[in-house]
Image (cartoon, rainbow, N blue to C red; front, top):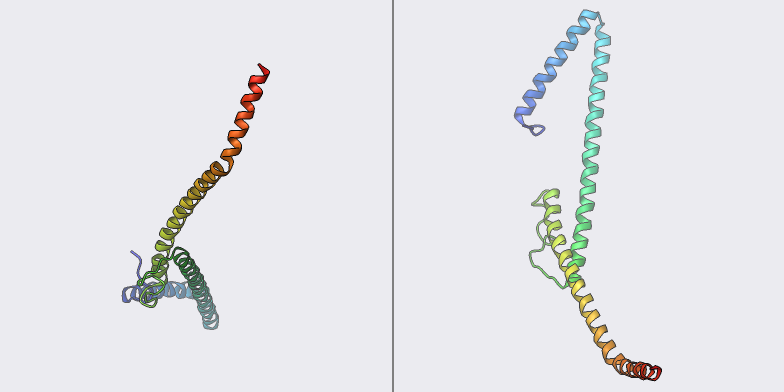
Length: 164
């Protein structure tokens, strides 16, 4: 079970773990014979290292947040383009919904689903359009080329019979 950082249970557990490790470290230093100045210096170094780790984790989280914001904006733009292209106007679209009420991950998911649905719809419409276009071309070819086809066929028959 993972506890959220800053929760009472986690703080107590972290604090007791920290205190136990600090006590063990001080006992080792005492057995070694480290001076109080050296102990203080090493404790300051430990605090600095811990702060560096926290800073790195905060930076990573901030970077992930920026990336997620960009992903959400990209998906929203894609959704808006698909909606405009397909003439889909939904009053309750994820773009128009309250963004601050959800986490970024939830908002990204709520935008991704309609993008996928509309992308499939667009692909289906493109297939239908291609089929209709092919049918039109076939009919146009039959209409415009039919007379030419009949003449060519008659000439081929005449050539065939003449050669016999």
